[in-house]
Amino acid sequence: MELRIVVLPGDGVGPEVTEQAVRVLREIAEIHEHNFRFEEHPAGGAAIRRAGTPLPDTTLNACLAADAVLLGAIGAPEFDHLPSAEKPEAGLLRLRSALGGFANLRPIVSYAPLTPASPLRREIVDGADILFVRELLGGLYFGEPRGIDARNGDSSAFNTMRYSVGEIERVTRVAFEAAMRRRRKVTSVDKANVLETSQLWRQTVTRVAADYPSVALDHLYVDAAAMHIITNPRRFDCIVTENLFGDILSDEAAVISGSLGMLPSGTIGGAVDLYEPVHGSAPDIAGRNAANPLGAIASAAMLLRHTAKLKNEPADIEGAIESVLASGYRTRDIATGTAGHVVSTREMGQLVIEAIAECADMRHAYHAV
Ligand code: IPM
Ligand code: MG
Image 1 (cartoon, rainbow, N blue to C red):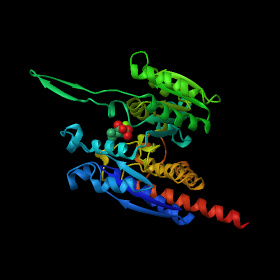
Image 2 (image 1 turned 180 degrees about the horizontal axis):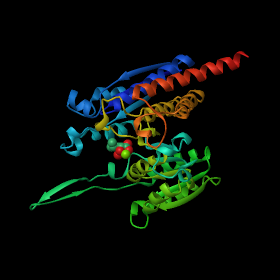
Image 3 (image 1 turned 180 degrees about the vertical axis):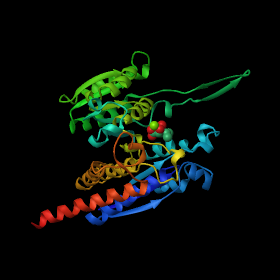
């Protein structure tokens, strides 16, 4: 299999974690005799420093010509003073919109060895396995008009939340298709008691659900969902929700897996799929070889599953992550409350690679018998 992957290391810990994800992909390519080609480009704050803009044309064009994009993290405090349209994050939003992926998949699982790393009690998180399907191209992130009005010495700022039936329908279908391959339950999260966008959301989701009679649907208001996610996470299978709610709830749900550093994501449905760990640029620990690369590595596994349609390769990566955790290795963010052995970003990457190689050896031995 041939894959052209554009890597956008981005800001903060982005370069450190994507480096490990790329090493893992190279290992997979070698074992399974695939040809993965990597091309690196600047994005976000790193691109502002080099090219004066968070998404240079060369970066965007390379992404549009790729089979998939693997991104590290975007955002740097030195650009906080810039207007929204010039911030590193604006480059990310422009990229998301140009690539066209509207469904952002964020799986959140409680790994048994990491239950002590969660601030939630073990009996609450044990066995939790949620797939967030976050709408990624609509809502307040992209709605127009938006802006700041400065008049008569008083300022006001405004954003627009707007959703069309088509936008709601397409992301809903992704959630139901995913639920068919999981535990056949979709929870739609909205604020239909207050917002018109949510009323349309609820009606549309309900109508689409009729096409999937074997999948159970329920609706929750976002405030109640926020509570149920951390009090009873096992009640959820797939959660489908609009852009901002999905952003907020997925960070909250990260405490189930012990750390934001564990979470991968993949954005599908557009011309080019985009994979990025959910964690941000974490400027406080950037450059210290301390960040958790597992979210980025698991994002690479998602790339192989969703874009390359491979089965064994992503399973090997995920199996390797589990085995490394079961052996007690922890980056700092997941070391709390566990008796694990604390390792660096690079060491964690190396451990995953070794576990993948071991697993491949075992498969060989098995076939030889
Ligand atoms: C995320 C991030 C981004 C978002 C930021 C960096 C723009 O928080 O992917 O969850 O809000 O979508
Ligand atoms: Mg976020």
